[in-house]
Length: 479
Image 1 (tube, one colour):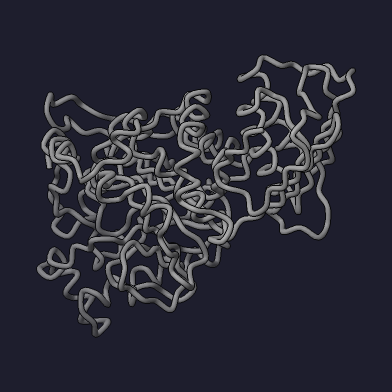
Image 2: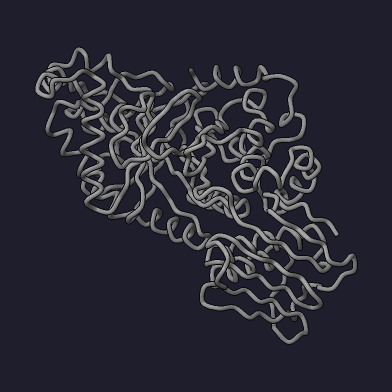
């Protein structure tokens, strides 16, 4: 029997080499209330992949249930004669157990031998960031990404919804953000226009879709520096108030919010309030990378605010993040900040760490896995072997999409590296090896093909060196 599960379970015991269970449409199901999401996921898989619609009159029995004594995301999967039993420490544990069962059934043509798997994640937060600001991905494409996350046992979807190149979230109190900030005249060669945003109905639908897959959604609104699309909609919020269009070249802007104007501060709090109401309690990511200090060093209002606070440009940014964090904390929302300066992270916030050498007193999300980089620079092996920051509360794979304008190209960048990443953050080091992961690649690619998920081929996924094609993409998309 083949057991090529990704991520690798903590413990697998094969108890017999003979087939003891075969899934057919006659199988009966016994599920408790905490198993509803897992059952729905399994039924959807069986219908889509094998055309099975269960009638429940046979001898094969599948039991999904919650039990005490297991971690909340842990599970125990037992296959015995005519029986599959998945016990989970909670709703998520049962759901992850079903994802393992799905992989086993695909690999073994629905026939399993006796085995026992005991499994649980090594990290609490296992995320993927999809940048939908640089390029708009349809709600259907976002759902495909969520499906892929569920099969990989990733539980946090970091959804970037704003940046210099586009504002993608409909907010009724600031409608011009999506009506103006979501459209740019062209991008790169061909000068094709680009636009798109998510209505609040789209967002609620995607939140429901994610929740059914035990995935939390963290929206990112990149404040206060990567806000060219926002200040195109509301020019008076910028330092100098010029009317501009949404940039057509990545990185080709100096526009940012003025941190010395009260109206800009009021705007941010209004946006955060409506976003928090839409997404609920949890986290909101405020971006924060690559700050534009030089812009504020010549802005009269920013200079006046710095004088009032007795600080410099860095202190002005810290004041902004601290006020935003305190405001959201009153609404039960915690802030995540990505910054070149860990000292800017406010008390109570989480620090998204993207590079080595940084230190912070705040809890850390280790976002080492930069999947926008070429495979030769961020290799499959590096995704697999990276040692997580010791004090991290989790890790995140990051897909900035400046050079990934389609879901096909995004898939080529994501896979198989996301498989390596998820095994890193799920499986204890002593229970896995990169050599064994490589032996699973063919089976993994077949699994992705069956699910309709785009991926890189082996030649591109395992290059001898960084390829020149990345530079061609940079030129094509205008940077």
